[in-house]
Picture 1 (cartoon, rainbow, N blue to C red):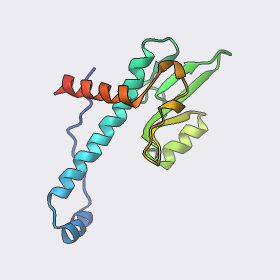
Picture 2 (picture 1 turned 60 degrees about the vertical axis):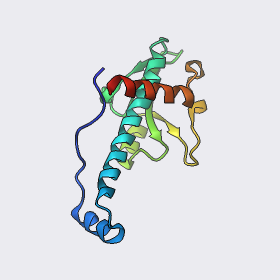
Picture 3 (picture 1 turned 90 degrees about the vertical axis):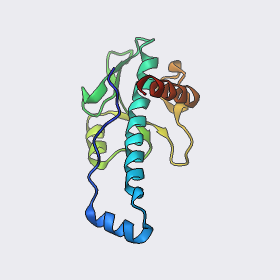
Picture 4 (picture 1 turned 30 degrees about the vertical axis):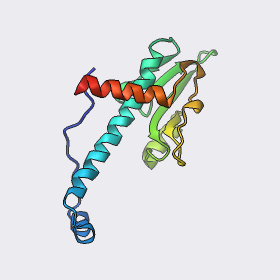
Length: 149
């Protein structure tokens, strides 16, 4: 599996740069901010990969990386032959309004890892048999970082 770390540098609004320099007098602020944004994106992908790693041990779920199926990260066949579509987010507020509208129109459910109060949401994942946990996710992230460094 290729590394998910991106070399792209976000484009910063020059007006935002000017205001932040005036208020905070910190040139490194933007580099720190870009690093954190990049880290958040990586964690989001690692959430999907962690869940996928647990799904490979079962025949219950199919992983759909990189939007193979629009707004869908995982698919499961229900007992009645219908399909259940699931979109994964790292945080409760990670979804933009157009993605939400598309997801809802397609009948895709959403699950997120971090609740608005900072607690994790693993216990609400729609498949208890995977036994997902924050402790195991952190181990998975650590292992990934060791293997890609």
